[in-house]
Every structure is written in C-alpha cells, then in structure tokens.
Image 1 (cartoon, rainbow over the protein chains, first blue to last red):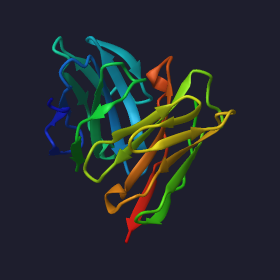
Image 2 (image 1 turned 120 degrees about the vertical axis):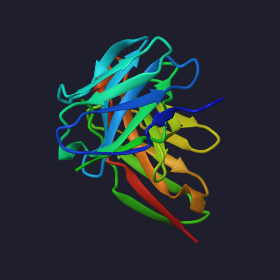
Image 3 (image 1 turned 30 degrees about the vertical axis):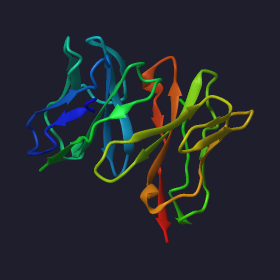
Length: 113
Length: 111
C-alpha cells in the first residue's frame, strides 16, 4: 500500500511569491491534515480536510489556505511569502480524522529567500 | 488548550529501557495522548496512543496516571536505530484546532 506522497520535496521561492504544495493520501483515507515544522516553533497544525471540507483550522494567517479534491488529494497554498514561511510542510492522512493514527508524508521543504 | 512539556533531550545506552515523560497539566476530559517518532528528513511516525492507565504494543508502553496530567512513553531495550525525536501529542476529540504537539525530546542512543 503506497504511503502519503508529497510534492515537490524541495522548493525555493522569493518573498512575495506564492507556492502550492500537493499531498496524495493513502488510498481510502478521507482525512488530510497539514502541519508546519520549523526549528523555532516545532510542529504546528495548519488545517484538516475531510471529504473536501475544511473541518478544522489552526492559528495561521489567511495567507495559508488549502483545499481537498474528490479523490482526497489535497493542496495547500501560501500567498505573499515571507521569510518566516521557510519550513518543512508536512501532510498526514488518516482514516479516522485527527483523533486516529496519522500517516505522515516526508514533507515539502520550502525555502523563502 | 492543553500545552505539553517534554525534556529537550535524553541520552541512553543501547539495551537500556528509556522513559520519556510528557507533562500536560490542563488536559481535558476528551483528550487522548499520542506519541510520535521522527527521524531527520522524514515525517513523524505513530508509536502509541492512550487515554488512561497503561497501553502496550509491540514497540512501546504508555503509562498514564489517574490524574492524566502527565504520561510516560517507555521504550524497552533501545537500539541505535531508536535515535530520533519523540513527540507527545494531546488530541482533542472535539476539534483538531486543539491539536498540540510537544516540543519534542531528542533521544540519542549510543553503544
């Protein structure tokens, strides 16, 4: 069974640009959640999608958005990039939502210059 | 919002039992405690989850006292491959907005 796939694995952007990250969950998983990991703040919850609906959202500005498609694949978008957005962005899928076991991808490492 | 506190780092020798404690003083009634392991450049991996008393699986045990204000992850007979960062996560069944990762404990296992 294929795991959670995130693309791209690495990317470099400049301030003011926007970026879109993609996540393909494990087959059959309808919940996809996103996290930001930085050395200073650790792992922080961004949002969770379930059956194409955003079910929960963390404390991030509106520049961070996401969506989920009918095949459960998800994308997250960050607009007007800031230097502080440099981080590892992790996606996790679950069959039970956020309370169950989360299966994480390897992440997309974003560097903002 | 349950805030968690863990030791920043721990050292152990191969073959020893390692106990990592997580403090979550304001845990709510419908919060679960979950532990994840993370290796460099990889996403976290689920280890164990519990609500109260003791939970055991093939890789670890989780001890939760009656007041549930703390929990202890126990790794029996660690090996070099257990060197990783371990995260304590308090999961609220009501809303993922209350998902709280601990600061993580960096475990270093040596010979």
